[in-house]
Amino acid sequence: MQNRTNRPNLTLIVSTIAVLFLITIPVFSDNLAIKPDDTYIRYDEILGGFILAVRASPGMESILITESSADPEGKQDVYAYRTISGNSLNRDEKRIIDGYLLKNEGEEQFLMDSSPEPDSLLGEAFKIFIPRKLVFGYPWSRNGGITVGSGTWLNIRSFEKPFADYKGAWYDNPFIIDSNGAAVDEEGFTREIREMIPDEIMEQLEESGMTIYSGNTPPILEGTFIVSPTIMISSSIANEAVPHQFADSSYTFSNQSNHDLTIEVIQEQKSVGSKFEGTGGFIVGQDGNFTIFAEIHQEKSDSWARTAEIISGELKGNGIKNLQFSIVMLEKSGDNDYINVGEGRLFYDGDSFSEKE
Image 1: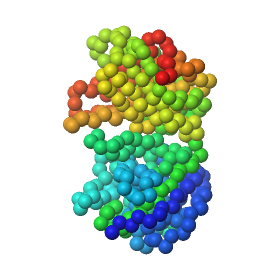
Image 2 (image 1 turned 90 degrees about the horizontal axis):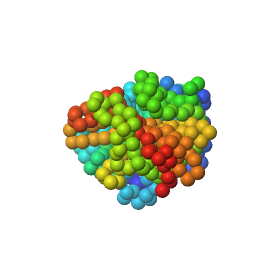
Image 3 (image 1 turned 120 degrees about the vertical axis):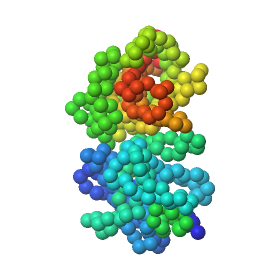
Image 4 (image 1 turned 180 degrees about the horizontal axis):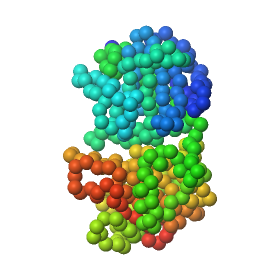
């Protein structure tokens, strides 16, 4: 029988130096309810993400990180989060779904643990690495991605059985992350941007004519901006003629956090039915200028691709002045329709101003 009692809300304050708690919730007798002193979370500078530790209480055999649902009846579909790059802490964990045993393999991994280990603060604890970028769902269902930072809601789903097996009782423990914020290096870029864009690609972008800004005070870009006409002015693809006009584009920016230097990005070409949503975007800039770095994941039946989209400009009045964007292939598998890894294109707004819709 599924155990769905009223769920507490946990606020976990993250520090790279110390473990802090700011949680005021009632104490439950249920063995699957996680209490304030049963958990901590810290940011790991080396791994570039959060390490969550949860006390392995008697009767709790596994935990899984999912979306945080406010649905009190538990009827709304909630998806488990997955990473988009492998890590040693989550590797080799097994999960049972409808009687089938799955194993974390390859790059995408579920955020779960059935193997508690010794911990100096909690005794025995489950431990899960939560990277800054997470995805959920699949192409044939509701799907998307988030950038984890200050204010992000997640959920620790605790299970009576190992391997997150729903044949036993389970319990939802929503929590919110409050972090110390993102830091930029001496050149004004965050760690996540450095990991996404290798130095050679950054140099390639600048050589193509792309303007790249840096800094930790970018302007706020909430809203949709129209790029018309969309002109390709540079390409590293053999025999591709430039300049060349493409279908008009639009960019929708939302959920920007200058605390974490994160932003969500959707790029559309409505006339051709094209829409791409970044799994996580990072923004830097200053004095009204900005550059956004976002990853785009595309999937077909027998192939996939991971591209970087880099968008620069200056927020001016009711629009963006001198907007440019580059698309660079980072990784792919299968279909030859994708451009080669390392190849890219540079576009700009032909009238030098992208109006806000």
